[in-house]
Image: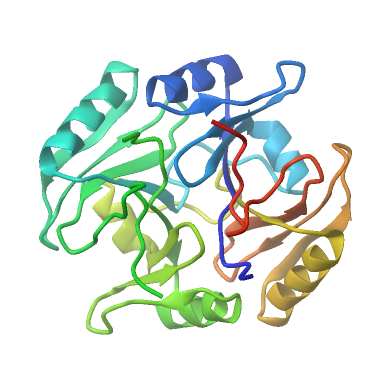
Length: 142
Length: 142
């Protein structure tokens, strides 16, 4: 079994309840123990973790990060340009910042970026060269 | 079909070839077009993207990030404490920074953090309360 996987992407956030509400609006399903100070939300292929920014830094033996671009983006690949528009609008309606509204991309697809309520960057994309499997997962081949 | 998914985690890096070599050593399989300035590596459940830090920021309409903690961590959940030790050591051998060597965690598991060659934080963990499916994916339930 390969260890080349990402089981959980954890985002440092300023307000756990606010972040949880945003991601539930985006379709993630909460599976958290309400007594805990961390939230775990199940998605198609991965778990999203939400944790206080300072708690997460402390857990990683790190100094808490500044606001601004983190050097990490999370991409959601969808089935069509139309679904990109729908999903992007859903994020904006839930309070996300419209970083780069969806547009034709130089690489032949269609893509936009929003920032979530804590400044994390999500790309919403349709890539005609990347097929999604029946579960919606991106698999480039064996 | 739910859009609650992460198709690609893209990391901004300073040296594409160096980053690619590191992640290949960790078991990720390159599926890139060598003519392109972005790298895509397939993992179990997700694709890892590697892109020049400034290129990635530009693509996201963002200012390039500073070094330091980004507020994002990527967790690899494994099957046992022993596999955590093995995989952590593999990362260190490939040049990662030993941010927090694996140890018993307050939440009942076993976990460590390394920083990759560009400062991105990975947690390697065994969580006895989280079952992995036969593909090694974490699924908290429907």
